[in-house]
Length: 199
Image (cartoon, rainbow, N blue to C red):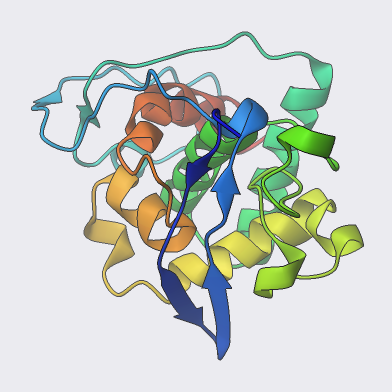
């Protein structure tokens, strides 16, 4: 299929091999501008709630041009589920920013079921995780808190993820054909964490 892109490489996490697959449908962003070589730019994080450590949200500044979408009620509910999963994993606001930015890139924060011909093999859920690659059962992967915790389990295995640019940390777990594409969502992800972390 002409619109599919191949994700290759394998990341061993907790004894399981997570292999990339064909990347298609809503998760594909062929027009995403490469961002890893762009200079960090100053950002202002919108903190609607007190108690959010703004320094943890975007410690390196955003990389490259930023994208933003308007969220519906279901997408906002999924943001809150990612934050709940982050807290359950015992991680901080930065892990939530990385997770939300990754989901924005992979699924636009939609909990995707099987997409038929456009499906990335058997990829499902907020993070386009594959049951055949050891991420969990289809039922688990489409559970938003479970899928968040599975992504973050992989993130915890990345040595020094806290000090990496967002796109590098996300790419190490996701192994995407477009490794720089995650960076474009960092500002919106940080704004969402600032808004919902204590809600």
